[in-house]
Every structure is written in structure tokens, then in C-alpha cells.
Image (cartoon, rainbow, N blue to C red; front, top):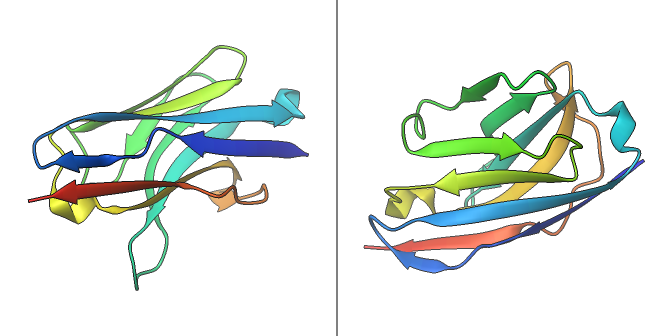
Length: 117
């Protein structure tokens, strides 16, 4: 099993930046892909960014060019650098392990990002 703890969320003005961290522990050796998701109030959770063991990344169209996902080599921490933040980026952000595009670990508590206009 893998345990996930997200942190780094905050209240920021539009145009600002934040870096989210996801601390990963447990069966790290089993991880091949990890993703960041977000869930805005009243909306479904959506995929934001994905990174593979080999370092390949993918992003939702809404964050391309603004967000960057990265990780430590040992999968101990996964980051989400968020630049040029917009009010529509306001959400609770979660990380998770992924297999076949499906989240596979128990969700953490998430970290709240609020972008004011």
C-alpha cells in the first residue's frame, strides 16, 4: 500500500504561483505512474497532470503551459508547480498512484488552493 499526504495549498492572487507537494510512503517500489487531480466545489474530480516512471508527463488542456509536474527519483515526493494561477484553478488538489489511467491508492486529505481575482 501507498500513503499520500498533500501540502502546499494556499490563498493566492490571480497570476501568482504555488508549489504543491505530495509525500509518498509505503510500497513505493510498485509505483509506475502518479497524477495530480483537483476537485472544485460542486464539481467532479478531474485529472490535472501525470508523470511516469520514465519522466514522461501529460497535462490537462486547461493547465498546459502553466503547471509542471515533477518527482524525486525515488518517488518519495511528487510536485506540482503552478504558475499564472487563475480563479478557475481554485479546488482541492490530490495526488494518487495510477495504473491504466485509474487511481489505485486511498485518497489523501488533499490541499486547498484558492485563487482570488
